[in-house]
Image (cartoon, rainbow, N blue to C red; front, side):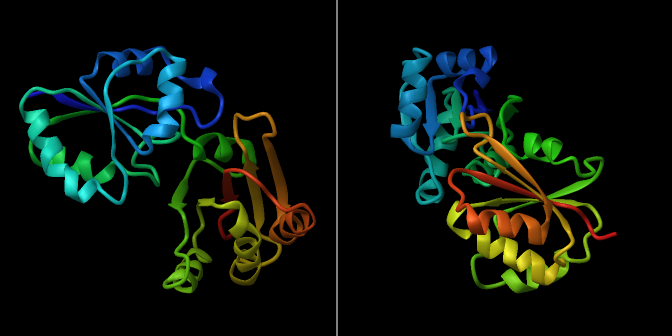
Length: 223
């Protein structure tokens, strides 16, 4: 019986790939990729020729049993997502949990993930924080925001650029216009930026300058 390796990949800058990650991907028998076309560019860049197959939110429930059987037969599998650490708002949790339930070894390598640099960049307290990932799109969104309005720890969210202004507007309503907010965009990439201020100030900034790229929002807790 072999092992499942969880392998982080760069969130933008290819120089953030670790030597160990490259080694594991080269030595694995199979690579599971969220999108084989996206990951194919990364694998080609680092001259990794290990066979790969798609593993994403739409097929993971159908393929998990077969993957467990492969692992039990001695096949070593490395799991990657399009960017960052798998299972953090990406596919990976289901397979990891099933491996644990079947006493199959799981090893997660340290590496790139977007929320850690965004948290540190924010200048907001980082000794205690909560990671919320993406807010509900419709159902449950208002309820979630009302609960989080009372959270005293720093809160971290992921958001898409076309929903950022709407979300910042909701923060003004539920958290208050003066709540400190930091928005990090395009981390590790050429046009990386972090905008800090009150919820109202950051909303005004992005209302006048529509955002692009991957986004992490860090919000100060209730005082």
